[in-house]
Image 1 (cartoon, one colour):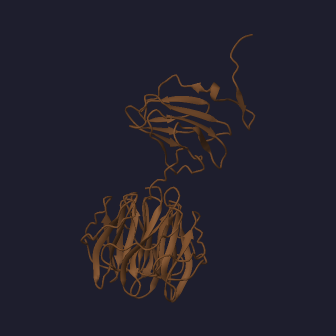
Image 2 (cartoon, helix red, strand yellow):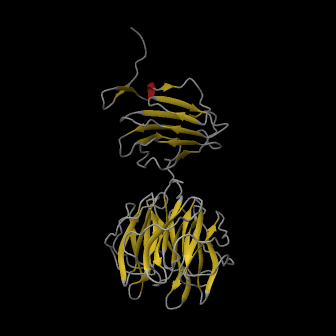
Image 3 (cartoon, helix red, strand yellow):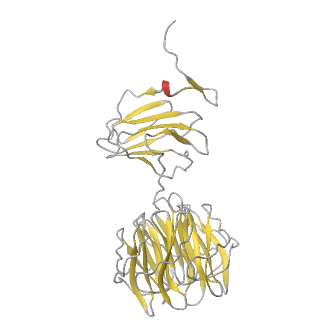
Length: 421
């Protein structure tokens, strides 16, 4: 008897699967824009004419293996996109983006278990990390209507359109802060409700606000918050504010929305400031009131560590707002310089604040801002109170006033949520 003996793998189910040496290689060169892959197979992927989205099996067993090869060294021009089809990829959920973009690359993946899912044995380059998809929607919440604190919210769709009021959940309050966390969720926390509070309210990736969670850390108001850390902004930081006097303490929020205890403050204690994410995984606190208006900033690294003061650029002011735009940059806007203003300051992907840009739209303070649509932003509401908004495009250009939707209010907060448009 003669023939070739292949090594094989015994799956946990008792079914024998071929190992890498015995993969079934496709007879066809894959040139289409989509491919549904089968475990135990090898594929030659030719992306000369188009990107190829590869859907992995919806179920897999430990030891299942698939190989993909860049047939004509064109993945650098037209990438492949891996859709893990409900299973994890390198420990990240299917909502994460997995792309391979290097000419001549090959990808050899093996299924491990439900926790880590598909893991590359090799990909011909340094281990490729999934890229978190951009946040698509926003939420404005809470605030003061000139007669009382409220807990209502208004959702913002991926086109920047603000929806009508949603009945509030949780304690009505104002002068709170909010941030994106976990990439597709948000958290409102702290504020004033007849006195300073430290409670928080989580927001699901569907924009649903949860009931109050007993706060951790010092109760305070007129603070700021932003997302930071990891792949994208999967954590958050609340910082500064007024506990009865100005402080610089911060509280980190995990990717599960759990607020941590006080961290000793770095930089000048102040309130009435703003904060935003920048550089995809970092944050910046800026401007505010120390007893007088300031324009200094404090950068936050991807581990949530706040740096010392950086001399300010632009007009010192308080009661302004800030948010991310363009996926990795930030914008500070509006506020009170002694009188209300509409000036803005752009922040580049390295955290450098640019000089003043002449304001567009109605000058105001005590407004809020959030990202939307993946790379754009919106400023809305403010003192008066008013319910107008101003859209910001992916280049950081602010548009003229849009007539507001929802109850006019000030002293509110906002954040991005949802990976789905």
